[in-house]
Image (cartoon, rainbow, N blue to C red; front, side):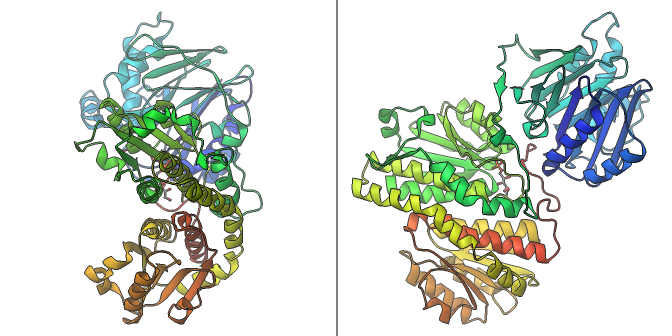
Length: 615
Ligand code: F6R
């Protein structure tokens, strides 16, 4: 959420910053801006709307210079406008700052500054922070060699909230400083040049050497050297990491949207999630990153899985998987609820947090809360080196490659695959027999080619999307494992097509939701041949009896369902616990095609941003 790119080196900053912003556009896209220091002092340009507008403005008014900061915004305080776009300046106009996060006490600070005669041009909390850093800068003697860094530190000690910031000052044309608390920030080290960014994908074409900053780290880059200190205590040292290109570089290739590309990547991303992790001798799974001995795994009494949005839906599939295969009680919760709840927890509870980005503010806070209370908390993340991956006690990487489309797709199936492996492993340590383990492994191995097969239905799913695209409301129903898939399908439909969609366990229908059914409210029915097939079919009949239109997701060979549903999308047969990996694919395609047919901006739906780093 919001993207920052800063540069200092021997090359022109503008093209580097602009390229970085385009790569970070998925993090926020309501306005963008850039500030650069050159012979004329500090110059900046800010534009409401997509980064393309900033690019166009820079063509007629370029910003030459070898040091600069830039930002792509997802609005928190103050709507999208040129004025509210970052960078913001201090009262002197000589200092510029970009910020990702929220300054919670900005209102009282702003009131204080207004009383002192400061003027503000925006409604943002960030401009207040710029004034605060500027005020401290004025108070520090010019003889202080670390004047800007110390001003930033002093200012940050006065603020409540979260931040990833980068600051430059006209009087220091060879210096940028930055800091983080709660919002990701990475220092990247090139040949005679340095970058600061919220996401390595912004700078990966220039260097792969990075330092992932931790909360309260303050970084200063000056004359080709960098230093990292802590806001609160002596610094514990830092590690320079080499980023794997495959983990960070994302190109759209021949696909019209990242979302479609990522949907089509699933045969590979699912394979990546289980490759090298299947134990075909013991019929179990090898998950070394858990950092737990077999004895410790055996001692688990309960499991709690926390996440947000799609990650929580995959957790819900995980709940059914682990309970059914390993007979361990599992609870899932919204990370945003868990962090403020005081729920009683068995001491032998193992906590999992699930996050594609590894930076979601609520999930990170839930992880910290669980660890503060002394629970072992493991992460299931995609982004290598992300804050959640670094702060958890261990975990499993998805290896899905970058997910850029704001609507999560391949991360869902990777997460479900990891839960399958986990359930298999925990199950084999308990009651699951070798032959059951073998059956699961054989089914897992078939999943990538089965997904491939479903993807071939894309054009026919587009025809179905065309038929239903003008309805204003839809229902998604499913039972057992398919309940979470229905929730995921409804979320996809809402977020990219803006069609209202609700999901329920099919049998809940008659407890209220059935009132919504009429000819104008189609239902997507997840009805594969599983243990609740007959029950589900009865629920389907209840919809048909009320003239509701039905799109069924069914198992190949099920001719019966075609007699009742208006449209059927068939998926290949697999074991019931693995079925979500298949049934979710048509739902992703259905929402994708619906959104495209409605002319929506699929990769950048309104009001949303990838990686929600504010609370
Ligand atoms: C939905 C979507 C969001 C994310 C959620 C968690 O398509 O993308 O609901 O799933 O914001 O994000 P991560 O997994 O990065 O923690």
